[in-house]
Image (cartoon, rainbow, N blue to C red):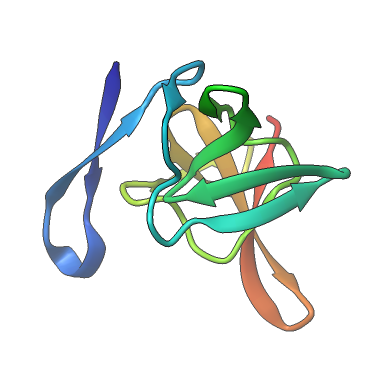
Length: 109
């Protein structure tokens, strides 16, 4: 099953399709990045995270604490208890500066 979100990059609206958590894909998306969180390796592209499985790559929820250099397409700015976050498919991404670079950390409310 696919989820659909909007990508408003450069002011142009386009549909972005991605699989639900628990779905297994045969190949990783082109341009994916390797992300290690607490010693566990994930592969990510556009806010969708994958873990290796015997039959392919399992789509999983973004792990808490994962650090991304860009927001997933379609993320929107929200304020929760006075804190500015970005929300995408129910996941909160908190903007931070790490080593002088702007990043987004998968956050818990």
